[in-house]
Length: 177
Image (tube, rainbow, N blue to C red; front, side):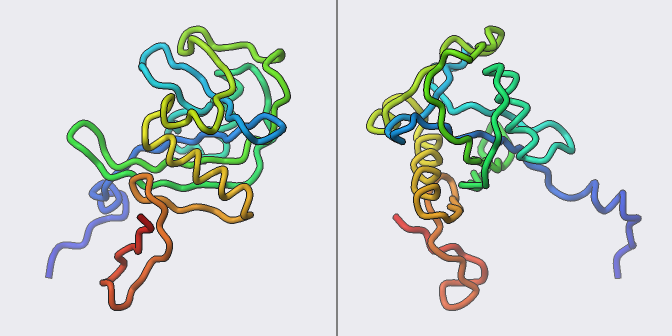
């Protein structure tokens, strides 16, 4: 039998991951999504950002929105949780999307110029033209979850219909394609 590790040693052996938290903020009609243009990337994103060590996702989301847009948003419920597999340049990623409510206009926004070049409403029909595929997947899932009252669980941006421990294999997700 192997050597027992002290709790701190054992926890140090466990995998780590990255995580972000963002908000779905729409226009009053729900036909457009608030988007920000980072100055360090070519694609647009929804307001939010990377979680700091020991920071809960909802706190990260509120902090990032205040930093990026200069506004306080009363966040609603969790709409999306997306697990994105690791790749050659980064660890596995958890992406949370909270309901950020409705914004009637952009007049109260004070854009964080150190990281962002622009903010605007992006029509829902243009999401795939302006966002990465994974971000568009999350935003579309968030819009659907807001309407249905549910929470969407995604795996690499793809909606997971159910998690089975039966015939499909232990813990293998049934992915709706």
